[in-house]
Length: 124
Image (cartoon, rainbow, N blue to C red; front, top):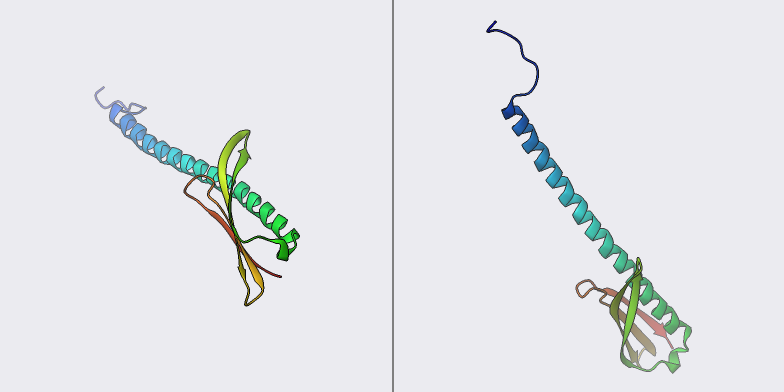
């Protein structure tokens, strides 16, 4: 009777399996959380890029000789999933009389840490 074969897990085996699965679940949840944050940041950067492209296209459509040099700052709203994200669009226009060109730079820091930056040179 003492040599009976018993099926099932011992409490130690169960605790070890539970511990290993817990570590795996914690690791995967960190992965998914980080991935979600990266996707959100990427989406905001993409929308900010469209705002910069929109401004650059408006400037390119303007007669280069009519462009005024200087820096302008505009408050913009980036709408993502129904949420309004406030940002600043900084447009710098500088002229080069020697080359007869206009340099346009557009910067948008959508969330204070990542910056979308465009620069182009337009011949007059």
